[in-house]
Image (tube, rainbow, N blue to C red; front, side, top):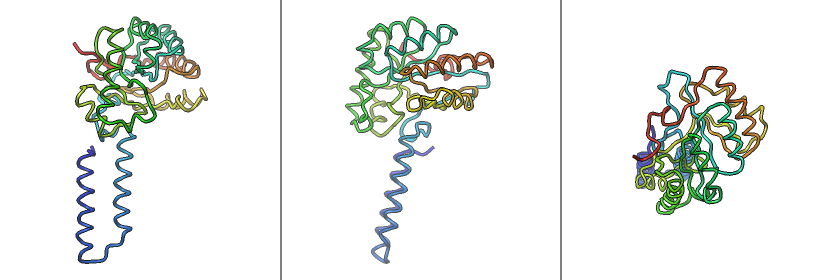
Length: 258
């Protein structure tokens, strides 16, 4: 598992060695550019591929799970579409995890309340879900997480320990913030792409092809296409003897502070 500090130290050392060699021999600038480019590629990969554990330890699945157990997770609620998602889950007696945006909780506290009452787990997905979240400094990230924690706790009565970074991107600022807030970072290993693709057949086929014990499915409770795919997906899982279980059961972790 690559770590940001180790990679940074390695590439700085390589650049320093190249600089040292250049005092005694001709070192073309392209070699400096090549090293810097490789460094950038590794950082980009580690920051955008949440399962890399490059910046923070992330729970993306339970690879040790041998029973047919899987977790469904939903990002970006609560909103009116969440109600339809809840209807489907209730119909099939399935429990999921919802990573909620703070500003949406302020707008729809009653939907969060229903989500909790129906036995679903709640996680933190930042307050603003800003497109610039990846550029926030440590204190800004902490403020967003704590603000959303407080909103969740005002309805739930306890603090969630689960956090999913917006867009699944991690970086040093987020790592330092999570060291303060003590949240567990939750990723996924089955990405539906329902946030960008609206073709239901494609979405369902993509998910089903990746289903295996211990998996975590990423969905968004933001579109009617997801609602329609969800009904078919849950039916498929139950027909194939998969148990849809909460994240805390799949990962053997605590979702809330005692």
